[in-house]
Image 1 (cartoon, rainbow, N blue to C red):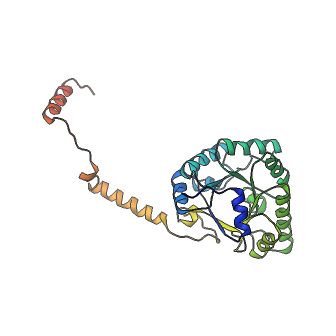
Image 2: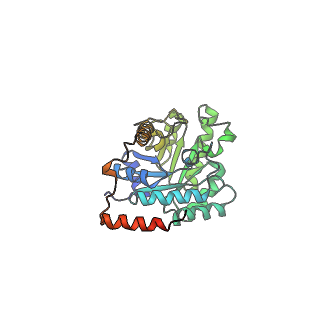
Image 3: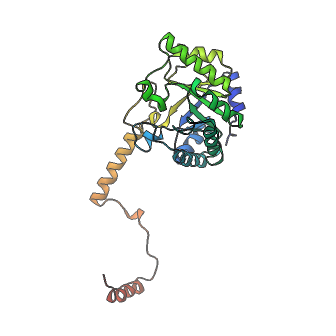
Length: 288
């Protein structure tokens, strides 16, 4: 079992050019698979709103939901670096709320760091949380929590003016004390420049290959979520098809009497005559 990474390990990986691989996961079972596979990090993302709870977006996700899923992931992957994703409403109102909720992630959720969305607008929150001794992962570009204000899930940084805004957000996040930065839905040219100027690890999800590592939703990579697959996601297997086929076989075997077979049944080991006598006597007095 490999030793759990620290933020210093992530920084050293950047400095020696080693790519970090991480996935977005919400449950103990999948987290255990990720740890066994050697995943560098796991993000317990607020995308659970769509993947787990069936919402149309991430906004309905609450702190209590997020904490519960972080606890499950930690139990499944005790030796993996885990990031808790601060949900919408947990840090927008004030620095005090931001710090208090970040502390909950560390104390109750058992995570190693928190992630929050936004650049210039949330720099003071990032600074406050960092000053409280908590590792902050920044997240800019396409930020799902504010997608409504963007007019939908739109790529950011495609024009010079838009790229300038993303770059300014990146610099603000770094100056505020974030220890890493996640770029989502950003053209490779914009991401490459940010990667070049910032001394902290810069990771990508739909930001091209000129980054210090890549993150992807396990639900996308493993073919679990069928409602939508973003352009930047690669499907490495199709667990959804396998699961559906397995369920069809189960339904067929139940309806035809094939399941449960003898090997799936427990055997009675007592005296059968004694049991039969007991049942006969019991039934005489049974009223239903």
